[in-house]
Length: 381
Ligand code: GMT
Image (cartoon, rainbow, N blue to C red; front, side, top):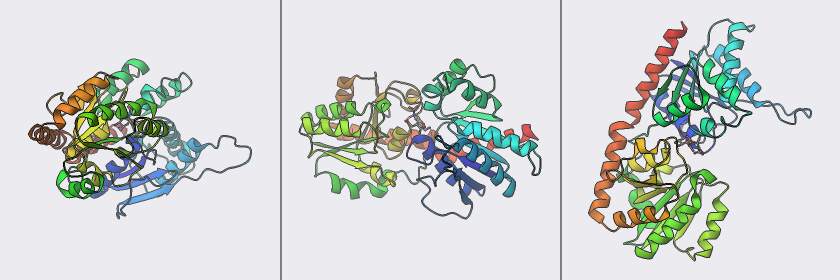
């Protein structure tokens, strides 16, 4: 198939999923065309089946708000015509599905070869739970979801939320997020960064996010403070965003500077995660929790919150822990318990890897997307 993929090319779960999907599809012989304002950050290796088309937005002085959505729609329809795309797959509803809708209309009624160019919209979470529920975005988000030729959601939670809050009438297929289990694994890189970050006998706790308020980064520092009072440990913070400086100040106030490392945004996350023993994910809400899945594939035990789609991923007490949002004491208690028991820690890490491998491996999930594309194409023909 010839597939056009659009996503936010920056750090963030939806862009990561879209990029990894494109890479996997290319490896399976499909032609993949990324269409976005810059090259997705996880697209590091060239591949003969992967092509990138940059969307240029003209900066005419009259445009206080340059119309990216329109430039994207134009580029989508051009790329579709020139490269004879079978379909478009957009990640994150706003504004990508609106642009895809316009591209489809242009392809059907514009000056070029007229045909139906189907588009699939994948919902990732904040496009529904936060942005879409802003009254100013709700009608157009609902419209573009309903106009999609196919809609997928990354968890059952998000599917239900979309059906309830948006009252959309079309089918929303759940295709969960995935991880490349060959890349994300413990044995390759664990020792290298472990030696760099911690002394012999110290545990490594990690957190990976975009440091937005929904991630509750201050909770990470509070929980780690309690952990390090009981167990020799280091905290490795991966990512960047609005709450980073607040977290850095908390570290100074608690005199934890020699225990906490802020790495900032990292490209090769799969090389760093395997060095950790435990991941803290105290988010108010995760529609899926991709960072936890990536950790689990590396045998890193997740301690997360019982919110959104995360309980679909983690079985409490078996392959990770779930607590109520904001229950710092419970998070610290579970963390201390598991970090104190070497055998249980390794056993739970193995269970986490087993879950990632048996349910969320790319090799299991990518065929679901391929089947869905075929269904959409069949319906559209
Ligand atoms: O969590 C964020 O702030 C980023 C957001 C995104 O769109 O990049 O993440 C969402 O999509 C991820 C990939 O599908 C999911 O793993 C995250 O759980 C989801 N975030 C939320 O629902 C808050």
